[in-house]
Length: 171
Image 1 (spheres, one colour):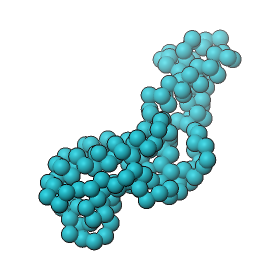
Image 2 (cartoon, rainbow, N blue to C red):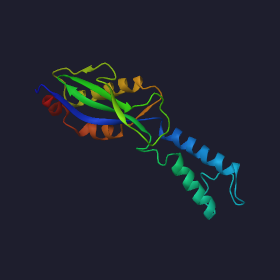
Image 3 (cartoon, rainbow, N blue to C red):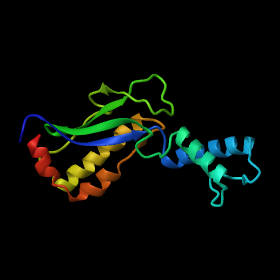
């Protein structure tokens, strides 16, 4: 077993879940476009498929100016998962602002060494048990980030196939 730190994955933390972001974005587009409609503007321009050229251009502009696509643009932090000896921890980095709002200008700052108390891994744990404990650590970290969305898709997709025992032994 090694004696250092083994970083193995950064999990993005989003300001809010994708469905909430899209709903807010669509409400913004609808509100602006129906406040000053063109003659052909439909009732719900954010979801309309038959927009006139000017309406379509306006919707595209509002979509972009609101913040564009949710993925990557709404990230406000990262949980950096790593092993330290026989523990799994989640280090936290987030945007360096007091108030987190929709923005395109971000500077990430380190916040703390462990977002939640570390999870101990028994010496005899196999890969499946280690993966379960990693997911438990992520769940603890998630509970510390009220109202935020932690994207665990990569971890959940790859996790069952990784040799967690070998990775832990390298730490």
